[in-house]
Amino acid sequence: MYFSLPQTYREAPAEELQERIIEAKRKLGHKLVILAHHYQRLEVVGFGDHVGDSYGLSKVAAEMADVETIVFCGVHFMAESADILSHPNKRVYLPNPLAGCPMADMAEMADVMEAWQRLEEFGGDKKVVPISYMNTSAGLKAFTGRHGGLICTSSNAPAALKWGFDRREKVFFFPDQHLGYNTGIRYGLKPDEMVLWDFSREEGGLTEDQLAKAKLILWKGHCHVHTNFTVEHVAEVRRDYPGVKVVVHPECPHEVVDAADADGSTSFIVEYCANAPTGSTIAIGTEINLTNRMAHEHPDKKIFELSGDTCPVCANMYRTTLNDLAYTLENYADLKPIEVAEPTRGEALVALEKMLEVG
Ligand code: CIZ
Ligand code: SF4
Image 1 (cartoon, rainbow, N blue to C red):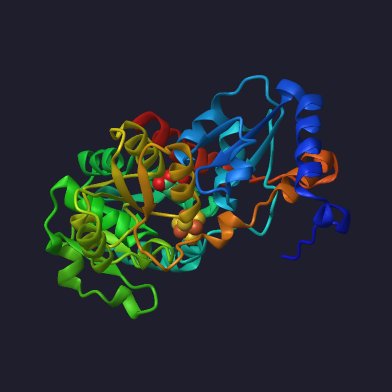
Image 2 (cartoon, protein in one colour):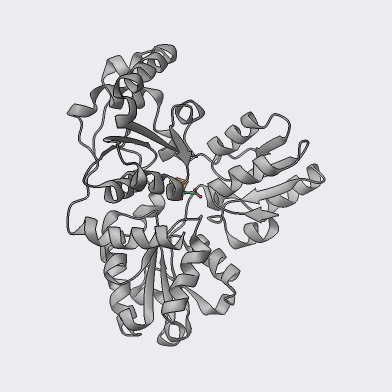
């Protein structure tokens, strides 16, 4: 996809963009809502009517009654989910259409279908329930809905896994192996009850026996931002800052989550920082913009990035600028909204609504 912001918007100074955004918001009034993900740049978060994780923002999208236009400062799968949940009354715009998620792209429909075909030999719909992380295409959410599964986010992954095992013997979890594995351990599974489906290999690289015994089948996807954190980083901050609390995101590898003091979604991390006593020292293992914002919002605490010199930035979240936001707000009537067509929308909605029910 090609996307280029008109030059006037690219070159406008920040103060002018800010004024124009304020004016556009004023004109649109209650018909407009701006949703901003926790990983957005500080200046973009400042314009969010709601700031949150994909779960919280999805709920907002589903609930807002008199809003006509949603501008979602986040990545593509989030805007798609907002469209599915808010259809048909609202139009959803993604200010930078190039903002995707490389982890979501690791689960391609054809590969997931191939895996499911193999899982049908192990009971299919009767025995296996698909759980799709929010970070997937609408097509895969629809697949999940068709097969009686649900969508999870890092906020509700433990509840979603319990929901799955309450209903069927096996769970097929995609695309993030780390969130799946960390949640499986928390649920009480043993490491040998979880297997990794490697989509680059014949039959996922798994034997008949491995698949028959597995309770949780994990897709071999990962987030390149969160897999940068290591146990050495945790050991270093513990050595350099006695008394430090380490809080990480569950997309990090298990050994990092295990070495940390706490782990959870971006909203969990936000609350963790807010609730920590004044004077706390906290090292955070997640996307840098959230960490920097926490440091900015809590000057009474020492909050910093866990991995030291490496900069864990999500280039996709970082793509959305004030320039994009101003352009979208001033021109949305001429722009193409994010729209998920039927029957994908309806099938994905079933899985997303279950996510909201499970909470
Ligand atoms: O679900 C989300 O919003 C993501 C991508 C991360 C998180 O933990 O909030
Ligand atoms: Fe995707 Fe990772 Fe960026 Fe989240 S931080 S949007 S999972 S690449």
